[in-house]
Length: 446
Ligand SMILES: Nc1nc2c(ncn2[C@@H]2O[C@H](COP(=O)(O)OP(=O)(O)OP(=O)(O)O)[C@@H](O)[C@H]2O)c(=O)[nH]1
Ligand SMILES: [Mg+2]
Image (cartoon, rainbow, N blue to C red; front, side, top):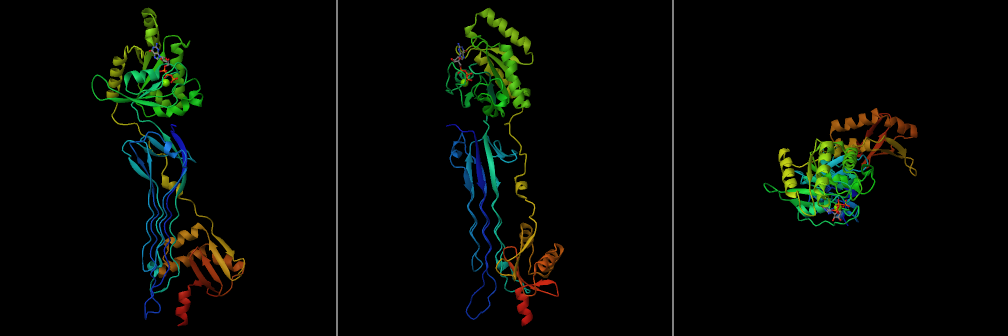
C-alpha cells in the first residue's frame, strides 16, 4: 500500500556514564583514580534514498532508537560510542514535530541528509577529577540523557507541474497520454487514489515531472473526498494544469467547476493560486466544432488571467502545444525546487527548564538526606568540585538555594550524610555550616 504520511517515535542514544575506579598496582596501596569517560550516544540521522518513493517502510515499525554509549571502564578506558541510527526516506519527505506541528526538516533539494536527534555526550570518568585537594574522587559524571521525540513524516512529491480538477476530468488520461506513466483510468470518480508521477518531454529542452493527484471536490480543502490528503503533493509544483471536462457528460458547468476548484486550492494554501495556472479543457473530441469553440471562448472570457487550451487526452489533440507551453512557463520561473524552511530549532525542544530543587530524608535511615532535581545535576555537570573555586561555587549554590537551612529544618545534625544528585556524598559538619568531603576529613585526621 502507498503510505505518504505517518507518525513515529525516535530516540537518540544516551551518553555512557563516566566510570569510578582506582589504579591497583603492586606496592601502590592507594592508586589514583582511573575511571574512563563514557562513550557518546548514537544520533538519529535522516537520509534521502533515491530508490524510495513512499513512506511504507514506516508503516509497521513505529519506534526507532539509536544505540546508547557504553560506560567508561577501568584503566582510563573510554566507553564505546553508540551506533548512529540511519533512517532512509524518499526525497520530498517533510519532518514535523508532532506536538507543535512545526516543521523540523525538509528532506529535499540540497538537504540529502541531516541529524534530527543528537546522541548524549559521554560522562567524564573520575580520572578527570583528581586534584591535589581530592585524591580519590568517588564519583563520575553521568552520561547525557537521550533525546526523545514523536515526529510526523509527510511525503510531498517532487514534481514541476501539478494536475488538479474534479474527478473524471481526465487527469490520469492526460498523464498517460503525455508521459510513460500508466495510471489507472476509469469512468468513475476517484479512480486515482494515490498520486502518480510522469516525465513529460517537450519538443525542445529538458523534460519535467507532472504529478497527477485524485480528483478534488467541493470541501476538499476541509477534508471531503480524498483530495485534502493529496493536495500536499502539489505544494512543491511550480505550475498547475487545471483540467476541466467540457463535454458536458458530467453535467457540471465548466466555468463553475473552475471557480470551485480554485476556491478549494485557495482554502488549502493561498499561495497555490498565485502559481502560474493553465486551463486544459479536455474531451474536445466529444463536442461538435461550433460548441467546442463557443465553450472555449466563454472560459477564456471568464478567466482572462489564465491561458486556455482545448485538448483531448483520447485523441491527442492539443497535447503537444500544451506541453510546450508549460515548458515555456517553467523556463520563465527561477530554477530550483520548491523546498520548505524549518519552523523550529530542534534543539530548543530539549532545553527543558530545571526542575525545582528537592530535599528529602531517607525513609529508613534518619541520618541520610538527599538533594535532587535536574538543576542540581546540571550544576554538578559543569562544576569541578576538586578545584578550590569549584568547591566554593558548590557551597554557594547550596547556601543560595537555602538547602542547608531546609535540611537542618528536617533534622540534619552533625555527621549526617548528604547525597547530592546521583553521585556525590558529603558529611555534614555543624557549627561551620558547611559541607566537607570525605577526603578532606581524612586529610584533617592525618
Ligand atoms: N472521450 C474522451 N474521454 C476521455 C478523455 N479523457 C478522459 N476520458 C475518459 O474520462 C474518464 C475519466 O478519466 P480519468 O483519466 O480516469 O479521469 P481523472 O480525472 O483521472 O479521474 P479521477 O482519478 O477519478 O480524479 C475515463 O473513462 C476516460 O476514458 C477524452 O479526452 N475524451
Ligand atoms: Mg485519475
